[in-house]
Length: 108
Picture 1 (cartoon, helix red, strand yellow):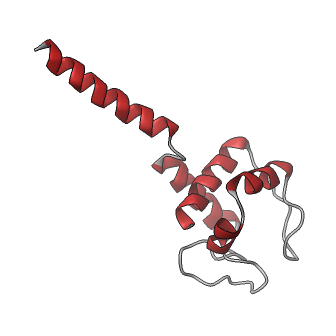
Picture 2 (picture 1 turned 90 degrees about the vertical axis):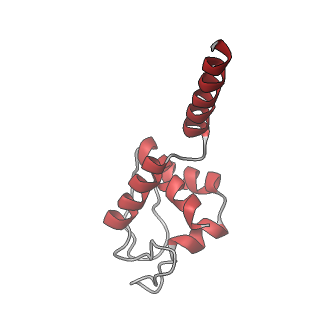
């Protein structure tokens, strides 16, 4: 009986370890997708196949494949002030950056 509890505890522990140390949880990805839809989709394609409403704004899937996430993280943390015109300046919180990058990871 004791061995059964050890095995169960090991599986539960492994599950939580993977959940909290992976590239992003499902909630992070969903929050990132919602942020992109609310703040970026006016110009950028934020989905896997859609076209950008503003031709000069690259689709997020292209950005996700073209740049390393750590470079995007740095740019987002510093505040993106360049890009296509007329791109507004965004200042994201660390949580918003993590959420958005978790979503970008799904677009690769």
